[in-house]
Image 1 (cartoon, rainbow, N blue to C red):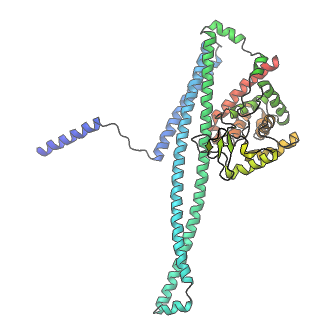
Image 2 (cartoon, rainbow, N blue to C red):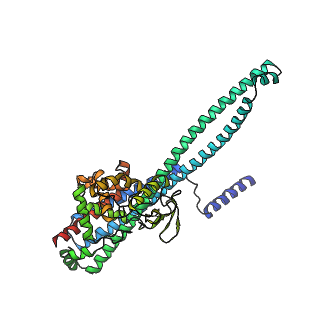
Image 3 (cartoon, helix red, strand yellow):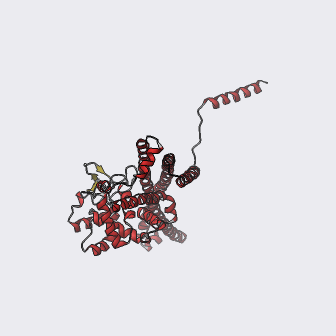
Length: 450
């Protein structure tokens, strides 16, 4: 009876403790954490799809103040969900980077251990090699000992070969893991850029909504008046500066259109689409032309304000092309502005001018630019930057001038190609470029109408 009493008392105490202690969750395994993130992403994608359906439906209805406000609010809601989605993707990638980095550390430890074993084996083999055959025979008391020594030596050589093969295999695996982590870091950097663009677009749409309410005072009659006078005057558009951060004497919108239309003659890439891509690129991070390369060996540098910055330029890929480009143009490479790396990501900066070409990519197009203009191209020259972008976009299919081809060309401009994987991952980039393209089509039409 006493035993039963104490058993019940103990169980009651456990229950009290369980209820009084804060909830405790066991750490998830990487696979479980990834599955959870993927489930959350799927739920977010369904929400985004539902909101897109609401926007499309409302756009097909009569143009009223209430409908316009509803569309803007849904766009803001969609952008907020997309920002959350980007957070999840960045979180997932950082988990993958952590796993790969851990694998690299373990592999490096294995290689170091095997190298130590190899060194010891080679030392023993060397010592054995220094002994003459007569010495080996005479030091062994019996013929059996002599053959045992030969067998041991053969065993050492076999072990040495195994260790060498294993070390080579591990070294190849290590290089593969290092390449993998570089790719993952590149993807993380792209998602951070996407998130920056999403936040900028959210702010833009929010301002649109606030401006619409302020101008109309919430009255339908005022909205209809606004609608009838919606086309902006050419003088107002011409005075609007085309925002290209880090470009001295940035052109007005009208001037930018003229440059883009000149590029169209060479490349058959539509002017509003080209302007949209350049606008999108110049708006990433607001760090275009804010850093200098200072160390050609490491790729490190500093901001224009003199603050030290790691990884301004990738030394193995971009430093030598950058030195060639600046030398050809008569520029000081250590005082020529390039983009800074995005903080907290760990990637590289080094993109040049308004079109944001990295030096190694510019080298692929410099001959085409020189042929078209009759002199070396300058990434920091607004006309050359437009021309380089037009050539690149033409190469990735923008000459077809359809929504699908231009959308895909925009994704390629951002990520290197328009694979199915990139279409899914960087959908926002392509969508946003095409939305900006539509706005520029309207602005250019208004410009030409006046």
